[in-house]
Amino acid sequence: AKRWRVFVALALWGILQVFTGGAIWAAIWRCCDVSDPRDPMTVNAFLEGVWSAWTFMADPGTHAVNFDLSERVVSASITLAGILFFASVLGLTVDMIREKMDSLRQGKSRIIEKDHTLILGWTEKTSHIIEEICKANESEGGGVVAVLAQRDKAQMELELDLQLPVKQRRGTRVVFRSGSPLVMGDLVRVSVHLARAIIILSCTSDPEQADNDTLRTLLSLRSIYTSLRGHVVAEVRDIDNEPLMKLVGGEIVETLVSHDMIGRLMLMSVRQPGLAKVYEALLGFDGDEFYMEEWPEMVGKEFGELVHLFPDAVPIGLQMADGEVILKPSWDTEIQEGDKVIVIAQDNDSYRPQELDCDDVGEAPEEDSVPEKQEKILLCGWRRDIRDVLEQLDKIVQHGSEVHMMTHCVPIAERGQRLLEDGLDIRKLRNLEVIHHFGNTSVRRKLASLPIESYSAAMIFADEAFESDTLRADSHSLATLLLIRDLQRQRFTEKRSRICNNESEGTVVSRGYSNSLLDELQSIGMAYCPMICEIMDPHTQKTIANNEQLSLTSDFCQTNKL
Image (cartoon, rainbow, N blue to C red; front, side):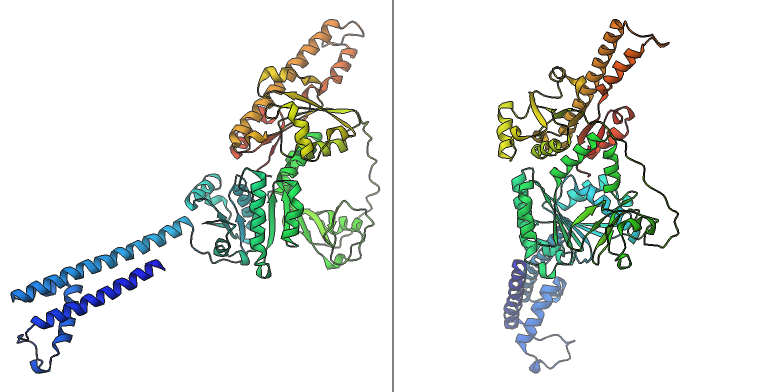
């Protein structure tokens, strides 16, 4: 608006110059051009002066035909004023074009898209999310992903090009815009009301501030809910804030407590080695993944019948009409109208129910009973959701189990109070006894003070003190992992040597070990216990994948990718 006011002012100034110069020129001009066919008595001197002044300003060369001294002085003055006027107009035009180009480069212009996926915020997770969306869109010939974040557009484009080159985007186009998701005008610029899906990411390291920003974004979206077409998924950092997000978001908003979910996945993975790779395969769009769809022809059938009706998918549960999700329901559960079948399939268009002739497969074999025993688990690092990890662990371990916690970021004297402030009184844990140790887990002498050889499982978390520096957090986690494995190997070797030296019973086998020795070695086989290590930076994951020896030391959970 300011630029247009300057243009209007310049236009008025140019008109004033033309009429002023025309009046002066009319006062000194004499009609004496023999080539002019007009009658000198019929020529209007003022109009002729205005025309001459305009030609002097627009075309500086026209004043060269004047020979009278007064005419030369006036025409040269008008020409000089015209040069200055048009230079000002040209300069202003160039500034406006440059400003428009900068606006396009910085992502300030509006995008004209619909049915696109909109990501609000730029974090370490954004490139992974875009990669998965590109894989999901491949079967549809590609799509459009729009990103709105308080980052420079060129910088975001450069980061994405380094992590996900254009040829790996499988036909999906990614559009960036710089702006704040908290501002309604910026949301309109990315056509939020026309997006088919909206993802709200937490962009700050402070959980409370991140959740406050997410809440503010939801309030902004709430004001246009009447025209909002897409489903909204909002990342929440603190599980205690989730009820408030659901209250503000309403029915179309689904919240995801990322930190809490990752902690639970890691807990399950350490209790079942190899499960981390299963999660990574199912939660991404490589291979098979989860899909939900309502099939009217399935209404009235029992869930057990679905196994034979979906040859290209594996039914695993139901989403009831009221939104409740039931995994592994009983086989006699009847499917009602509005229920959706949850399956694992290659793509959303790769399966559909079919009537098949199947033989009776018989009864499933009985599950082997595994005797429960007390456990001793090592937790390295301190997560913000450590309370939830301890609560979940307390529900699944045998009574009398122990969890040993070691970190140098939280003093032992403060841990109980911090857990109490988060809502957990460790004295009320039923099956777990929490034993605290203080020390840097990446220092060998600190870890050496622990009974490393006696742990049945170990979990290495990215310490909350390093959350803002993912590479440092990963370096600390990998150092801890390698030190634990080396200490386990060393103590296992020492134990084996001690048993060999004290062996006096049974018959020695050909390899130099007796039966009782083999039994005892088997009893301490937990020296190489299951481990899960949290990794945050994708570059670290590539390093691990390219190092076979390192990849075999533990299961890894790349939290930002999950």
